[in-house]
Image 1 (cartoon, rainbow, N blue to C red):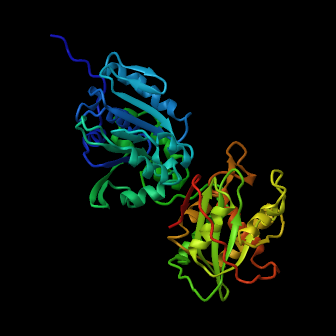
Image 2 (image 1 turned 120 degrees about the horizontal axis):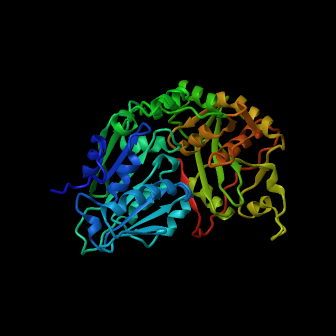
Image 3 (image 1 turned 60 degrees about the vertical axis):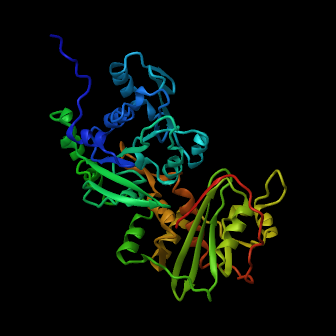
Length: 450
């Protein structure tokens, strides 16, 4: 009698993930728990034989295109054995039934527009914590639909370790506690209840990695990273080379990150970093005695100054100073006008921050930090960026590079540095100015820290 060849056998935790019926399921925790294998098998829709239906469409996402290679390689080793005749034609698998599984990447929030008119019945996210914002994840839920003739559930599935820049929003969405134990929760959207489930992954759950030395490698990591990757804990990890890490830690300890009330009788000052091809950020503050109350934070990309004039107007604050970095006075080649002149035509009269060195500006901001009280909800996005603002570590020499890493965290940090260098500057205050209402156009991506 011929024996059936076993192609792939799930671990107990993988089996739990594959059998889950909740709308959103996250398989995460320690490294080496077999998360990638679980995701690529689940994409086949084993519960309802979805991949055997011609209309079935699935999508696996990673943050960058280069990172997809590992997932692609794993599917090439498994899929043809499970479904002979399956073909990989980059960037998708084509199955004998006509069903298709696509690979994609979302490096920036705006990349979701590539899927604006698409529909999928299953979307999987590999290493979800690499997305520092939840915007791509939320947007892609709108792409989860099924044709009337295809009677199967639609699912969102994800895997991750708890050490990425997006770990905080992920823990909040799924209700994951620092211990990292499995949990369930429900979320209302309109009149529909969505069920969410987190399945904890542990290295010990994966028998294939026993006696490989992998545990010993993880044991050598710094404590906070080891707790995340070996123990599967979701404590907020420290950031190696963090520039404002100690200042934010003290602010949390001293409970200066809290609910900060807005006093309508006091002026609100704004502190800017003005991007050209990238993000513009605005911090909103009030001076209350010697305290600096950081009320709000706003960030957007791909927008012109009229957009930000509209943002100020909609906030409805009684404004005092608007302060921008020193390079705002540079004239643009196309228009022959500086952005400070363009802003003035929109009703935003900018003061210009003193031009001092980067390190002096960082030092001035650190010195001002003990006086700052942050609204934890409205400034959440900005605070998370500040926590990740860092210098790169050269592991071979043990030294840190002098210049900070330029990434998503830079713009919030540069905006706060405007506050650091200009807060005590002897710049005369102007009369209160409300920006002129403007007609808003479309384009770009934006979010608030609310």
